[in-house]
Length: 83
Image (tube, rainbow, N blue to C red; front, side, top):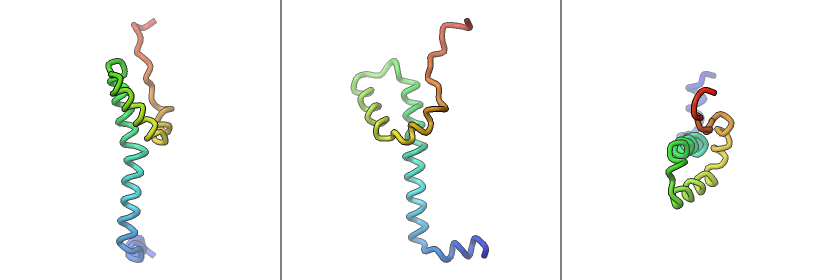
């Protein structure tokens, strides 16, 4: 059987539900955690108390996606020079 005939066997509603799950999962595990990492990297030393509280709440909410990307990101300061 070719893929087109297999897709025709699955109801359209099921495909829409699977697409919605995939889109929400990608948003939850990839897009929002990477945006949070970028925001924290840019604003770490300028954040106010409420902004930091909000970011920590978002980190808690999106923790599964954050833990996926944490080993690959480096937030250490660049240093004073080549020593």
